[in-house]
Length: 331
Image 1 (cartoon, rainbow, N blue to C red):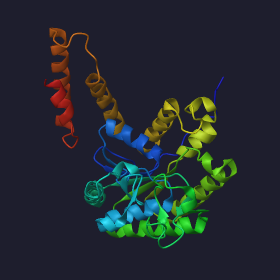
Image 2: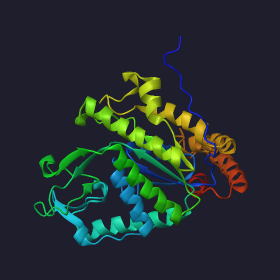
Image 3: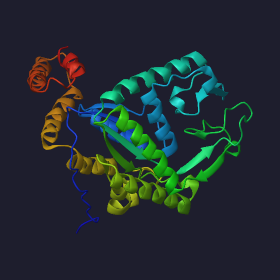
Image 4: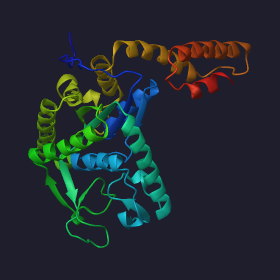
């Protein structure tokens, strides 16, 4: 008996290779896929602004990478004993303003260089709801704008609204046009996060996801080299069971994420790289092996055998960085 309705996404006309560079932006689901790609030695850069949810903030972040925008202290605000940026995740926040700016601007410079050379941009949209500062100066917190992160500022400081489809399409189309001028060969993959934003409400969450899905399909229909990967549908319609969610009943669990990952490999990654991923998986499993006796002759031979395997693999694929693994097996 089948435990679910199997859904196989349509393979992409163009596929990801280990020779490609991938920039990933968006929700926490982006980071899960990004971690798996990095583990299999794809060249990735994951969320230079930290986790982002709404399309306005995502488009703004991409524009800032293209411009290599450098932030100043006037772009920050002080809250909860930290300096913060409305355009960045709290992982950049710091009690010292200079340290906060150094983190942000270093990430901006890295993203600018990476995006210029990237082959793929993977965007995971989380919510069509935005939070806006309601006045030009609200208790010293900054100018009116959609914020990427509320930084635990009380919600009554913001105006919350659901973006219409037209505004999502317009903002992301402007971003795509800027990307075409900056990096003409770049290909874009859109996904919708399967994470439910139930703080918005059950009905409101579905309206939000529907807005994003409608907008993204308009964009992929009218822009060459833009693709849609149905991560949302794989979780919500294919698996469709609370056993595939974490204890909070909102985030997909390990089994669900792996299921989507396997579908992503089949649809989006070319056959040569799929074969290479299996070889890399063997190396990474050996790298994570916990020896019973690390000083034994048996373990020394284990390290040497894997070092030789790694060298052969690196000779065949010199564009992949195995330096950390080589250092480990050379101990």
